[in-house]
Length: 137
View: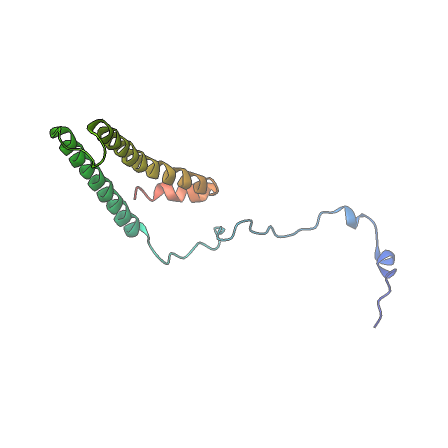
């Protein structure tokens, strides 16, 4: 059966084209669900996050203890120095090591918070409310 292209013009009755068609609104982000279909919790990551935070804290404390031990040894005994480098240059390298380790510890914390803030900015108000109601991790 052939379809006549001019038949569309014959069927036009007037004001129907001015009415907006009722269409369902598509989900803009995959994984963002409506109230009618809440997400099913498959894995509770709360324990994993706690373990990771403890490991990070232990790693940071051990780095600072090791750094303090190096500082103690280098300041306590004036004859201690790095081979092929004099005492003043050794103290400069120890100070550089101190600043590097402390900067690394601080920046890893700041970078993680900034990334979390950037991701949380995409959440809906309902997701934010659910997050803050769940309590601290």
